Amino acid sequence: MADRKIKWGIVGLGNIASQFASDLLLIDDAELTAVASRDISKAELFAEKFGALRMYNSYDLLFEDSEVEIIYIATPHNSHAELSIKALEKGKHVICEKPMSLSYNDAERMIEASTKNNRFFMEAFWTRFIPSIQEILQKVDNGIIGDVNYIKADFAFHGSETENKRLFDKELGGGALFDIGVYPLFLSYILLGNPKEIIAKAIKHKNDIDLQTSMLLQYESAQSVLHASIVSESDMKASISGSKGRIELNSPWFVADGYSLFINDEKEAAFTLPTLGKGYSHEIIECHNCIRNNQIESKLWSHQNSLDLSRIVEEIKNQIGLSFA
Image (cartoon, rainbow, N blue to C red; front, side):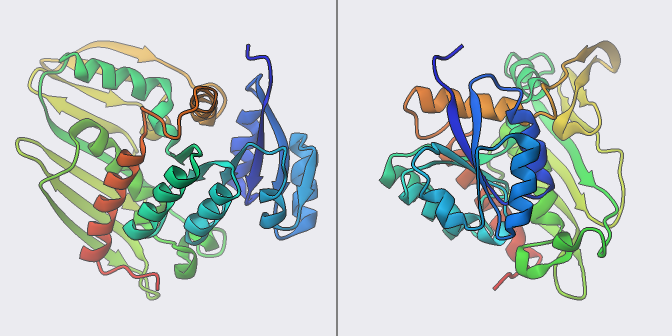
């Protein structure tokens, strides 16, 4: 164990922040030093529940807290860029919830702020760090299923405008693409890289956010068929097919507790790889390793990885006519 704890601050205290804080408690060398919400009563309740030492009713006050080393930003999408940049400029390391921004231009600004201020920054793509994803990437790299030529992945559920207001709020960057569509896009990207061509179609809400979006990513010798919806359900499995076999990630695939391996259509084995806690713990450990090694980015989910994914999302955003201005 490290000889000192890394001190965390959390900005934006909703459901995802609660899950993240629960996992933070599982990490021996982590301390939740401060939390911030514009609603001080919410900050007080959150601090009491998760043992934070201090609470603030202002994000700026948390950024000024000299003891806080790294800040987890879990506010709505529309504020990610400005809050990340402000925190980096205050000398804090930052992990920002996905999607890191609502535009490629803002994504570039965030990376520039990390580089300029020599502070660690990472988009919080927790799926990249869970054990099942780590292992299937290794198996694919080792050629177990041959050359990957087809990926099928979706993320879909039936949301409610009354219970999930943020999801349907255009001003906050709501809609299927940015909230959950980034997950299947991420899987295609980490396995096949940047596509040669993208075709995307969406069904829109009356306020112009996308309720569901289907995406086809074309590569030199592979295709990915991807889908995201906040108005319908799916089994949320993912399949990665190659010239020798395929891998099927358990549902929900983006936090899969395991996967099955098929060779020549025969099931070879099923593997169980549970996450520590909800699964955010694995990205927390990565942040600690990077900070202790004086890295400003993760080798597993780098600045360039985030920029590449942001560019893919931007292309789809433009194709389906999304605008958050």
